[in-house]
Amino acid sequence: MAKKKRNIGKLIALAAVIGTAAAAVSYFLRYKSFSKELDEDFHDFEDEDDFEDEEAPQRTYVTLPTKVEEALKEAKEATGQAVVKAKNAATIVKETVKSAAEKAKGAAKDAEKAVEETVEDAEKAVEETVEDAEKAAADAGETAAEAAEAAEESVQTLAEEAEEAAEDAGDAVKKAVAEAEPTAPAEAATIEDDIS
Image (cartoon, rainbow, N blue to C red; front, side, top):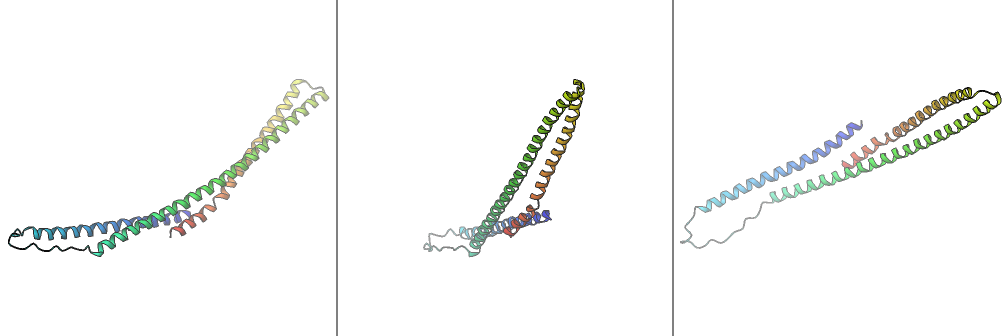
């Protein structure tokens, strides 16, 4: 659905650009036909070389047709409106991206805190395991090899717990990103409303 909304926005922007281009082409064609008429009028008078016998004609001024002026004015207005709409759309997109970036940044901070807590818990567990292994070795009179084996098993258990904690942190990041995504379509609808 978000793609449809984006496509509608693009379609509106494309229509504005096409309208501006059509106005410019219309103006150009009108100006070209006016220029041809003016050249023909000039050539009509060019053949008359009998100015010596006649009095100098009085000058007359040709006023530009208002249609050319109106077409030029319409083209300028259409271009101005298209520019304003494009600037508004760019501003809205910029704000949307900024908002999403801030949400992602917050999710990353939450994940970082979860990882730090997991690391701290793992460090505490390793210390406790080492202490327990030392006590067990002292109490039972175990050999150094047996104590090392017990410590190795404890470290493996802690490594598995750390892996699970890292997966939990990854899930927390995914959840934060998923929570940030539903706001994007609503903001896209706001962009389309502003463009319309």
